[in-house]
Image 1: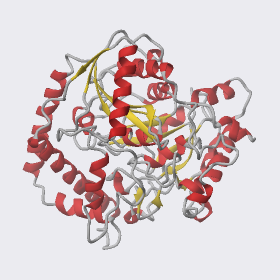
Image 2: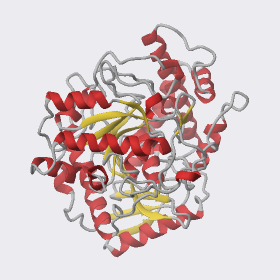
Image 3: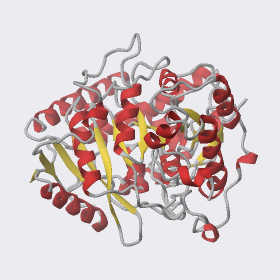
Length: 503
């Protein structure tokens, strides 16, 4: 066994404790993380831009002795940038782009002591619930490499679930942290709107739908990381409500007797896949056994008007994203530089008028007030995270002949309305409590009240203690001396040696 293999079984907090105690050096932590990535990535294709020399330079310059001193970390290749390094957002349109600035979130991650080893895969501009971009190819699920990680933070999810790193950055515009958390057996929390900054480039995104945070193995890592990064940046359009105390203090605190609503039904009225309903039933029983009150109740207000407004918002969001890059790069994308789904959304979005967009915002803000009233009677709303188990790779893809195929097939897997947390700005989390008979993770999802991450962290820690999940290791995990599935992936993906490295 190697040091990297031994460390792979520890969460970020435990790895940092080894540095603080002097048992392991920062350089050893970083080199061990690089070794794990080089060993596992050929089978998973999770890390698409290695930044190994960038990381070693950071170590030589001196890593801050923050809560995560020396812990290896990965950034999703979307939104968050590092000056002087490649940044592609999964798009051939950006294949030669190098960032000209460093995001405020990266500065805070560095101050916390984290060392960035690279960037993880994402679908083009994060627009599909899978990681299968034309630029970098599919990211494989460590629980079975024939399956998708979901998305759009699927590269980060695969990296954490395989033990390459103990936690990795993700972002969430409609479930993109929580879907891959469910598909890869991880804890994934989407914070309250504006809890983490989007600057200096963005004040918010799509009326505050976008949120930045991370995928983690442990609840305590998620809480401690959010403590380290939370807070407005100078000039932000609005702050999140202040927290009563550090979120790490909520981990292990008694949540009391919570009143939790739950529903097996998707907005169309049908239940999800039987595996997902089994996960929900199991979570309901577990929460009840812990003393909470469970009440079956559908979320009100999810009608055709809200559905149409969500569609308008996503179309206009794609037009904004592509338009942003057209302005930044100084040219329009060529005929082969956008994936078919993105091009279809972009063309549709360019037909959305300013009035159409603002009317959709009006409808969605009215819906957010409906949700807020509903949650005055409950502490959280529980559903399955995904409506199907992870899909086989290749199922959620589009072609020029069928450009919307990925959206239509992807919608079958993510029919539960996780986007509600983005519309309302509420915190929400996916918790890994269940695995199906095929050995694939099936997460459950809790929507919390606006500004109330504290209750979610208390509940998550209680569930983690009652039903631990960290000991469950994917077949493709760095703690295994010889990861399984090596001969079953249909050929290894291209090695890191062929990837464009940091400059």
